[in-house]
Structures are given as C-alpha cells and as structure tokens.
Length: 422
Image (cartoon, rainbow, N blue to C red; front, side, top):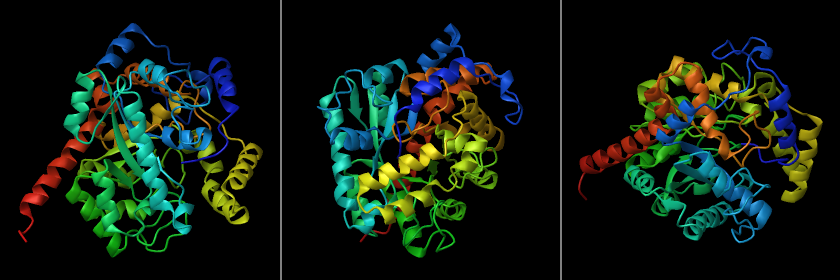
C-alpha cells in the first residue's frame, strides 16, 4: 500500500473523468481507451446496489487520521465533510457501504525501532474510539453474525484487520492478544520481508514461509482469524494455500496478468484460491491496476526503504517520497481498470472468489470515477453493464467476503473440537 503524496491529484482525476475516453464495456483491456465511456448509474443499478452488502476488505482511514489529525476524531470529525480524506460518514452512506475492515496499519520500520506492537495497539484503540464516537453509524463486529446484525440495524459493520505480521514481533502470544482485541485478519507481511515470511516487494530470504510462519497460519486457523496474502510474495502465497485449513483472503490485491506489479496475484495462485475457497479483493490503487502504472510503481517500496535509510525522521522520508512520486507520475486509469481485474478473477477463479478491497485513504492516485467511498455504486453498475447477474454481483460486492469469514469461524470450531484435551 502506498503511503505518500495524497493531495492535489484528485481534482486532476475528476477532470480526467470528464474529458478522457475509455474502451467499450467488456472489451479487452489491451484495446485503446478511446472506446469505453464513463459509467452512468441507472435506476436499476441503484436498486441493485441497495440489495448489496458492500463489504470493503481494506480501508486505511485510521492511519490517515493518525498522520493528518494526530489520531483524533475530534480533529477529524467524519460526521462532517472531510475533504482531506477519502472517507467520511456522508460518503460512506452515499456509497451504500455495509461493512468495512478498518486497517490497523503501522509501517514495517516500527518493528526495527521496537515500537510495532505499541503503535498497533494505538491504532486498534483508534478504531474502537471511532466506533464509540459514532454509534448511530458504526457497530463493532467480530463475527459474521455480528455483521448481519449490524446490517439489520442499519449500521456499518466495523471490523479490524492487522496490516503486516511485523505487528506480532515474532510472538504467537501477541497474535492471540490482537485476536482477543477484535482483529479478524492479519496481512502476513507489509512491504518488508520478515523473519518468517517473504514480502512481494523485498528480497526473498525464505522462498515463502518458514516453519514459524506455518505456525502463525495454523494459529490463525485455530482462532478463526483470516489469513491475508496481500503484500506477500507469490511463493509465500503458495505456501499459505498449502498450509491453511481455512479459506484465505487477499484483502487488497489485484491481478498480475493484467498489471505486472509484484503485489498482484498470479493466475496459478488464483486457481489455488478457487480450490481453497478464498477471495481476492481488488485494490483500487492506480499503481496496482493500470498496466503501465504497475510497471512504473514496481520499485516504489524499494525507493521508500532507501529514503527511510537516508532520512531517519519519518516526516522527512515521507516528504522525499512525495517528491519522488511527483517526479515519476503514473496514469490514474479509470473504473474500467478495476472492472477488468474483477472480470479476470471471475474468469480464472470463479465469481465466488472475487471481492473488493479499496485501500481508500491508503493510496494517493485513484482511477477516474473511484475517487472516494461514495463511488461504490458505480462498480455495481459497471458489473451490471458487463452482463453479470444480480446474484453474482451481490457476491462480488460483499457476500463472498462474509462467506469466507463465516467459513473461517466454522473451521476454528472444528479444530477446537478435534484438539486433544489437556
């Protein structure tokens, strides 16, 4: 997930949405973009969207609130318009969002400084404080049943996802503690390779998971905590799918065949995910979904690590990364690029294995027509335009993610029942 220069590109993207031209619905993404017009929301699309759960697998609002507003929802009152953010309550409601995994993210560098667990706990607390501050909008959820109850009450089911196994500091005890505090998935790595798992954007040291990494996956299965393979190397993905007894997720990943970024999921892994019963939730970041942009951003995490070494102060490193990004602009693309990734997952793995993981408030460049959380109805419309059935669209928009959560809970119960009594 890029953490960089979120600022002045959104007005530009809005202009692109008006003046740019795109390929025809369902067209080969390799064809020229001049044929695909903007998505136009119809009454049929609106009605179908109201029937959808709309489960976003990854939203980074808590980190943005920490960085831009000092970790305070008093300073960042999302009950009011929040133009510095991609998420606020009015736009969540406009987008019809029904459930969100809020990311408890802290940078991988915190592990090197010995403060990863400290800061992750602060982020979990920040998410819990958000839910308590806006009880009319959010409801804390830890189970699939909680999600369903929240939706029946007209609230947004709010779950916690840990982004990066550096959060556990090589401790299974910490992993259990995070689960007890409400975390319901963990992305095994972020940008850096760990002592027990290779990341997609760092030098491999283990060719996948180590024996301890396999213990981490096994414990997550026992707890009913979803194993998230976003950010990990392809070899780590394959190891996880070999070891896990429960369906896995890629909470915010896209397709390598379309956009060759190391963060994306190759086709053989999509096939394994089909067998596993998991879900790949497409990321909206332009640098992961637009082919040319994915190539241009392939070195982004390496650049960040180099800047962090050069500038020990986090704010100085961030400023340097912003300057690098401005000097290396990427094509934002359009909503059709996201739809292309969804279509590819559906073709290769099946409609039961596609979902959404926006990465809103964790990314700085977004496709036209997907500028913030209010735009989810346009994905429903785009899938409808491409000929997908309402039942299949409901799966992609959220039912698949809910199913995987429910299945992970079932596996945990079975493992507990089968465990020898001490």
